[in-house]
Image (cartoon, rainbow, N blue to C red):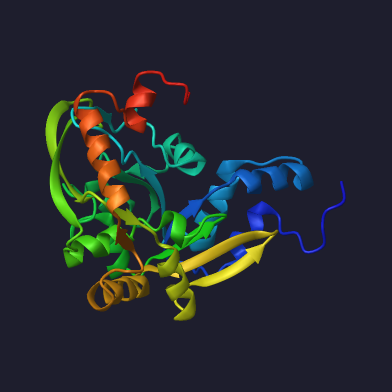
Amino acid sequence: MMIPEGYIPYQKIAEQLDVQKGDTLVLAADITRLAIQASKYEGSFDINLFIESFMEKIGKQGTLLLQAFNHDLPPGSCFDIRNTKPRTGALALAAFERKDFVRTHHPLHSFMVWGKYAGFFEDLSNSSSFAYDSPFAFFKDKEAKMIFVSSSVSKALTYTHYVEEAEKVKYRKYKSLLIDYVDKDGNKSRREYSIYAKKRGWTLDFAPLEEKMKKDGVLEETEINGMRIQLLPLDEAFYLIREDIRNNKARSIAFFSLKSYIKDMLKDYLYKIRKYRTTADKIKYGSSLL
């Protein structure tokens, strides 16, 4: 098989990016195309070698985080930090199986973490996913970078919710969620968590936010092997998102529609009478998703 001119081996992609030794790095990737290309032009693809290429790039003084979310857990469900697998893709699943990564404690929005600050993240006990004591707050303070491989700000910038909560946006409100929690020692307890949830009728759309980040020079974008790769300094992103919330009524982030309001009302009603199931429910009860 002839390798295309300019093709970068998948283990060398991290070397092409503006990432330095000691960086705190949040990596989000859809590896489907990456794996297909590597198998075609290099003969194989090893997801652990891809992860390790970023570990090598930032070094032992750096910190690598992978989103390991179970964000659609319904009330009363069980989260076992040792055995509940993340639903945010192959990278998180691969890190979940590794012994050199630790998992943060929050049942809805946990991270798999390796490197200098792994112990710090493992000790966090935030009850709200996006509060001042969450991993997301740390990203701003430590000038973390987020890299999107075959993904984008418009698809995967969960960090926006941290700024929304910090600014107490009016299209969200706090809800409580009771979870049966099994910790790393196997101890089970019922815990209460806080969710800054969207109100009925509100829909998120980060595409305008992504365009604003490009226009303001905050978001770096490149193409490697035909794949779009974005790099976002999260401390700079914080101020841009906050400015949009304060001065643009969050129009680059969220919008209200009557159609969505009616749909949300119907969904809530159907869930109440057990005619609607979340993704977590469908997986738990063996739906056709499996």
